[in-house]
Image (cartoon, rainbow, N blue to C red):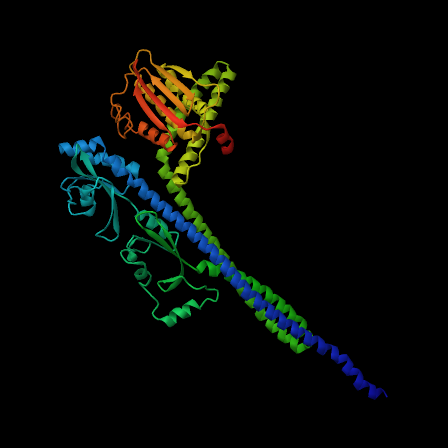
Length: 591
């Protein structure tokens, strides 16, 4: 009876392992299916996400490049109009004496930042130039000379260089008493943008209205159309291109192929003469990021799979040995994956350091360009601070600390003003939009008088002020309004030089407009018609170039007001700055 029961007993003990093994195999199959689906879905989602991020960054860079290019062109476009009115250049063309003309142009090119300046006579001969090698050249047949003579406006011309590339030139005719004396030509330096773009983007090009490439990070592209440029070095065959496009399984459909490599193409419009700008960015960064995430996922699923094999192989010694061999292989694979991930992280870190270095270099270059403007704007606050520090030191030695604290408080106000000036200059460098805020004209006037206090005390000028009891509010930029006030006060001080009892009257009133009147008892204004024109000055050479009132008039016009001047009946000059008044409702809305 025992022998008959034994065969029945063993099958009952073996059935559960078979059932368990079947379930484990099903679980492993499901795990593989889930892992494959997860990797495929993750690949698709991450590829779409990183591609969109790369596209957004490319759009942002393209907008920045377009803005910088347009800003450079607009900044240089006003130069010929100013130089065409320069009395020194007009006098040189009238007298045929150009001994000082080249030096005059060199003094302008440092402030303007143009590539070069040329003064051409009526026959197209170069009589003055910042590049002395071009003196004596004849440009009679050049478009920028002929078109400028035919027009009374500033002409923009694109012409080819002999050594490759293009010249970008603004030119304008110089007239004197209805006669054409010559042409002033300003060459714009746009090649610096090519050098800057080459260090950041993969490929950037700018085309004119005809589709011709005039700027490009690839020098061989200049003069071609975009279609000709991107096909300059194509893949040898369609089969090879298909193989390359499918070599990376995370690759998206390419926008274009540059030198056989799939790239993402972005295009934008430059608001200048129908120009367009396009950039080509590779998918390398997208592939690296997606592959990094996928490697982590595969490693995680590999670990789970290894554990599953471990429990499955416990049934028999053969399976255990097989599992050990497979585990060793999996560990080797994991080690290789970890090394690859570490190497990719290291490379990403090096790329980030390189990008930060490039960004810092760009910031240092921008700071160098701003240094001249900063030193000019901070001269007045620094001079006032020196005077207050000297006075504070004298008060402390005389044991008058309360009065010394008042001087230190004024120094603190000057430091705040210097900070506002530097912030304003930084906003100018970015070429962004201006944001106006409510400005109390009385407070701005007190700040301007505080800035001018050392000069007023040194000159012993009698100041008469009349301010209303209520606040006079306007909408504008306080730093620029104070700059206009300081220019008017400085102009009044200069006008009263040589007067026995110099007097300056300041009146602030509010009606339909906010009006600031500055009256002096100087010798008056000789020529009211050309007073606000650039380079008009009655000062001795070296004391000024005649841009103060022109700049002030431009600031007031930008704020929606006007700056006028007249001679007083009792002698002296009267300047009036009128700005739109800010009503109380508008003031509350602005706040």
